[in-house]
Image 1 (cartoon, rainbow over the protein chains, first blue to last red):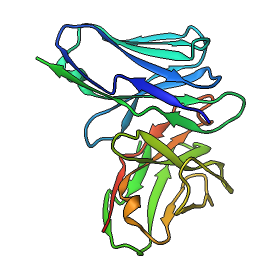
Image 2 (cartoon, one colour):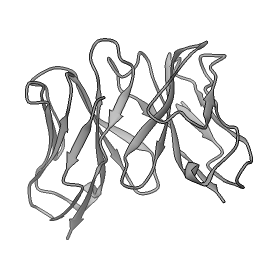
Image 3 (cartoon, helix red, strand yellow):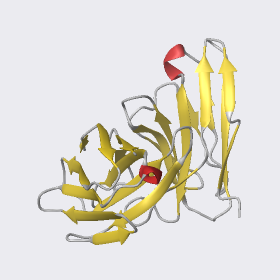
Length: 112
Length: 114
């Protein structure tokens, strides 16, 4: 059974600082997704990572995937208040499995 | 472009009542799925479908039924609601499935079972 773990679960950081959210998973996969969720809202797709070594960047967010280590990171550069949200990673197993397994999420709060 | 549409957005049920959460997408996506979201547990897959006439169970299928008679619609049925089914439910769709493409989510349906 695929397990997806995120850490930290909660993160408070000051504006302007850098930080990294980690996503570990337990089985072979090279399909990983990052989503953002604002309170009371739906999930918004941030990044799609479909190969080992994939790196995607959008504004102050950068995501990477290391399939050998079974690890993805979401790096936040010079955080701003608008980035406050809950971030989820989600992993699809290889070889035809159609199930997407989510991590428990990281609630990020940016403090002015 | 409507995307993924869920109804109702809010619902309160009494234990033992039945109801159907509706999900429709207008993107001609083959893959559709239902998740429930509970505090501290992320999203858990209930059922999914890779095309019309095909459904399969996810991680937490007990107490829920689905059907996929058309490409556009994927309703989720609660036959006899229980307080443990109090949750926020999300429908999501994808062109080809999570192995090759991202999921697009509906706005969610908040269900309370008393």
